[in-house]
Image (cartoon, rainbow, N blue to C red; front, side):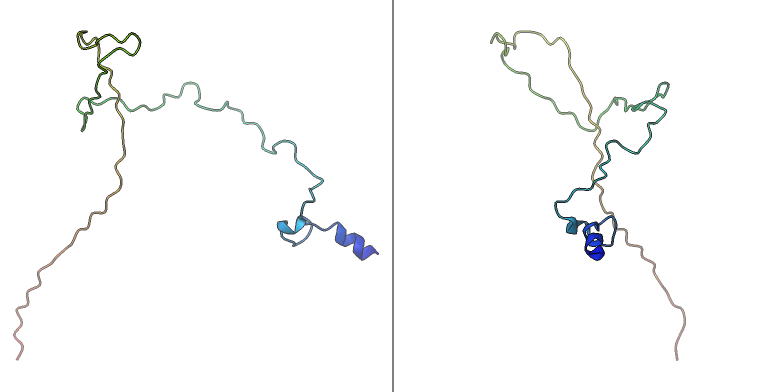
Length: 116
């Protein structure tokens, strides 16, 4: 009888059984909150840290001109007769995909020995 009662209390946490063998039985010890302690600093950027921003460059490698719509989406009047007030520029910094560069090194070998 004692052996049967002991085997009923065995699960993957108290023996070498795999977790899949536990079935639908839930653990009686359910953790309600994280065991990790709260840090001293707030999350995100810290006060006084300067940060890093990519500034726009004067001469980008590629410029893409997007077409201006011909008519106003609100009233439908022709925009072609209206002058340009400003140009909005955004720059996207893309990191190119790595490319394998194969370099072949050659050395010319000359021999001056005469074999008899």
